[in-house]
Length: 216
Image (cartoon, rainbow, N blue to C red):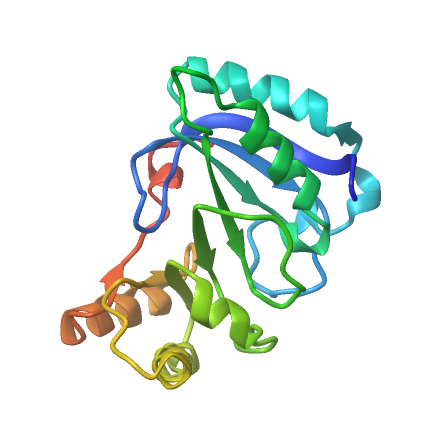
């Protein structure tokens, strides 16, 4: 069980990407990542030794404060949050944000799906990487898939990931949401993602709207 976690930052903002874009959320960015995407915009979060270890109790206090100010869910992100065992964090959040007037606050996670699963979540955003593909468990259990687009190989990867999900589930996955998101400042990525979304109506274009708005 993990009572202390390395935290890069925590903040209350709007979800800027994917299905829940524009909604009020409290973000906890955990340090540590071995996936190593060359275009990653949070490379500073990779080394977990650079960041303070915070207690779950301290995080819980800030979660409750953010909820009072309008946060409708938590987003655990990174780095790669599942480099850490999240069982205890999720259990405490669920148990101690519930009251006679309030349901437990919802917990979302953004993951590449390469590490073993821990914790329990109301929404799983899978952002698989071509050079380090996800475990099949995440392909089956995720709520949304978000593929970062830099070049045509990423477009092919998006197609392959969706086909693999359908093969695993052996049924039509109408409940899953599929997004292509151009890498930040990648003109080629923007062109490819837009054209792909135009030609494939079961995929939706996602943009990092928080960056355009200059918010966290």
